[in-house]
Length: 89
Image 1 (cartoon, helix red, strand yellow):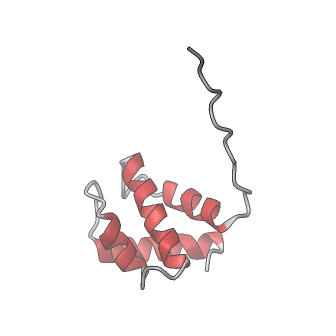
Image 2 (cartoon, one colour):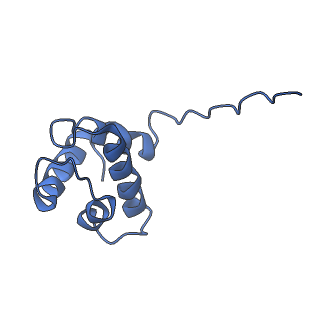
C-alpha cells in the first residue's frame, strides 16, 4: 500500500488583500477570542471585498462569532477602524 505525498502549501504574498484581511482580523483577539471564529470572520469579510456580501455588518452576521465580547454593530466599527489602520480599503 502506498501513500501519496501531502499537497504543497501555497503561501499568499504578504501584500495580498486576503493576507491583510486575515492578519488584521487575527489582531482582534480581545473581541473575538476563538481562532476559528476569527478565521470565519476573515473569510466572510473577504466575500465582502469580492462584492458577494453587501456590507461588513452583513459579513459579521453571516460569520456569527458567538465568542464575540461586543455586539455586531460595535464589532463592525472596530473592524473598520482596524482596516483604516492597516490601509485596507
